[in-house]
Image (cartoon, rainbow, N blue to C red):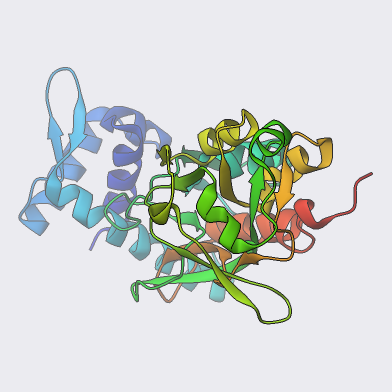
Length: 304
């Protein structure tokens, strides 16, 4: 298979512009179009829909794209093993992460990454919704859920400790729970659903945070909105420590039932499609995030 044609296809899929992709590879538009057409003829499918106004990925093209990226990564790795080509991190890296975490901890360090790796373009999709890595052609994702999908691999970024919080005004008006049983008499804020969440203490005591069994005036699917509602006095919510550390330090939130935390071993994972070769752009970005955030998480550091 013509890897130069694959490279052209990947660039055209990223840019949604065949001529611009060809120019990046030193090809004139006519040659670019002919090369893509030859690849499509070889594969027996149309990879890109063309019209006079725009280019878009076909369904077959979207399915083929991650495999094309993998073939190119394999080629680069093979050349690097022979001392040929360049193992320098280049290209566009598609990365998805929860928006709140990205705003607090990733966006502030992106300039530093760009200085270290000017050849990498970061295409970020920031949302609390979880996108499918394969279907979305993502190179890397940050997830705070267990790694279950066997088609994916992951590296731990940091622990994700989760605690109960409420605003001082709410606690003044409704009282502060002294035991987990007291939560039954409070307004609880649920994240995405109202299923019960197990709680534990360092001594091994267990309890439950169960929005479905009490007053639950709010069910939210956005972490930042949940935190803001909690700060405004809407009730008691469970939050990641990384999300609320500033509010706890300033007094805008109080740690409720401080001896308890979520019982699950929650972890922030950097996950990527399973393959034999990890492309340089993905490897350097993962290493960067682990160095800047994971080695000593900012939310666990003592205040300056």
